[in-house]
Length: 122
Image (cartoon, rainbow, N blue to C red; front, side, top):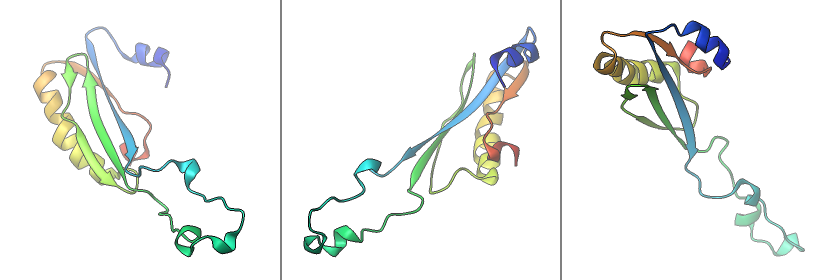
């Protein structure tokens, strides 16, 4: 949704809480340098010619919630795939978002605005 829709939903006195996640790869090579170049393939070692690449590279997920009153505890998760519904619900929502709301927004009317990640709606 765009910011106009958010403004219409956000009435005076309602606190907006958003969450987001970012993935960081743990591989230190540059994607464009994964291939080799040679004039004579017969002189290139097999370990270079047949270097296997992982289909899904390991990555870190960093998740947090934010509002005008503060930032939740950050969650860091190492995985080869996107965050699952189970991890999102238990690690992000139950262990971090709810305590964040209880600490900073206990008496507030809030609008929680997750992004469009599939795990958020599972």
